[in-house]
Image (tube, rainbow, N blue to C red):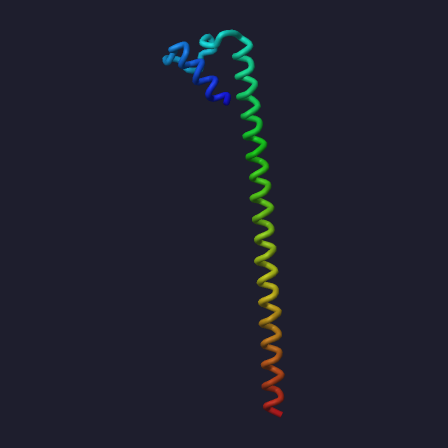
Length: 94
């Protein structure tokens, strides 16, 4: 909604040469509100960036943990298989 307001202010004043000039707004209060909104959005973007970074990091750790668990399970299964084959060969020899 803020983007529409800014666009309508720019469009109504027909000032296309400098879209970011504060003088195109009706008063200083509007300019302060827009600065506050833009600062708030910038802070929210930083917060969301760190939140997404934290989520990606924890997902990567979880994926690594799953891979290590799968490797461990496969190694245990391989050890069992080798042990069973060794027992079978041992019985055949004797």
